[in-house]
Image (cartoon, rainbow, N blue to C red):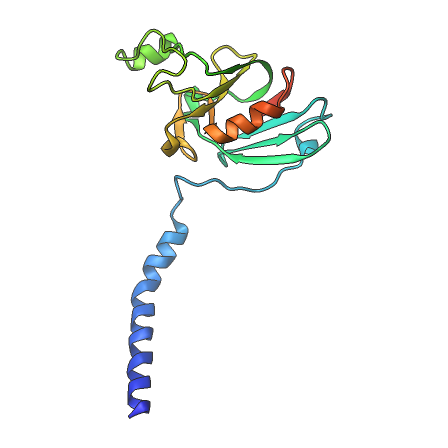
Length: 184
């Protein structure tokens, strides 16, 4: 009797595995649109010196890498621009930092969405900059927090790099004005 029950169990397990295999293979082949390829990077591959720190925003993997002046390393998941047209790549610098930033949509943002306000005050519900912002030397490009945590790991911004509010607060505390940045 035990032999019959064991054969039945093995048959059922085998049938389920056979039925599920095509779905598992397809799931492994399908691109995951909300995940980051979190792989550690070497700062030397992107910067000639660390100076007072370096930030690499990897748009493809949706990850932000930070190295402090002493070489310590942090890795954060991020949101990235929605389209290639909104994406700027290259080297930049952090030129200023703000806690509780105000948000002024760019003209092109307002053209895409006329319902956007002219300006949104710091702390105002719906302010997409979250709790902290670090401004790059490229106009209208920032590394900032977000209250909408669904955006992290996605192509969801109009050009900025977004982080969870607790992550931007951590980064904000250690990044200095003048820190070098590369968007890759």
